[in-house]
Length: 297
Image (cartoon, rainbow, N blue to C red; front, side):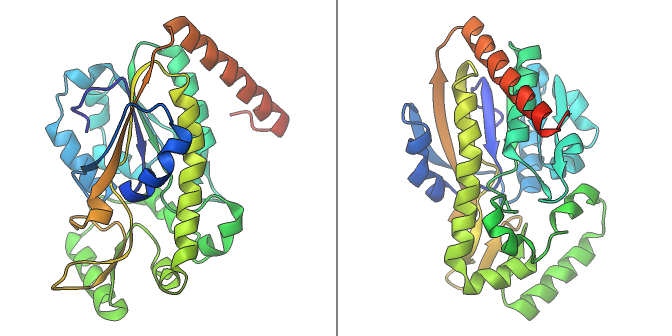
């Protein structure tokens, strides 16, 4: 994905292609190309590891990476300074402790600030939605099943014992009769009885993030690609021979719900001056709103 041609690459974390296909025209009616593509991985860590190993480092030297996912920092380590022109860990300053995520409006705000300062640089813009947790408060009862789950990503140790991880997976397979990762185990149990509600919460997350993605595509200039690192499983069987239900996004699981991700191409042909004016105007309104609401970051 990093090797294809784009001016701005917008990544929606854990976005299924089939779900995206049903809604994208409401937000991007003038999109010039859409298709489902096969991701390099079925989890963020797998996707990043395989992507980084295949990129042209010289080509990425003009890229600014605006990132909301702390797991990427754990994978890249100090390498991001060698790969990208600038790497911005949005989660370090904008982690919503109550919701345990980076909200899309904060990613939008940081992206605009970064763009205004660097209007000729290419950018990777990594939103954390539609990934769990569900940011609409009407789904707080689902998030409450394990509010500390996402905070573990802040403290994740990439060097932890892989054998212990495999043992934990084996225990879960035996005890829960399912394969899951990327979401709390209690969400898996809840989903078995309330599938439609969890799917609705996931789709609301997608709608909320697409609202801000749409606004970016109206400001940023040039070729904009919207895609995802991996999909999300909602109980699909692992295989015909082993019909074990899969939830979330375990690594190295090659089923369509996890590997099929959207590729949406949008072209914004406004002038550079108009693009920057729109960004400054929007950022000014956002800054005013933040002052009034007491958020001065």
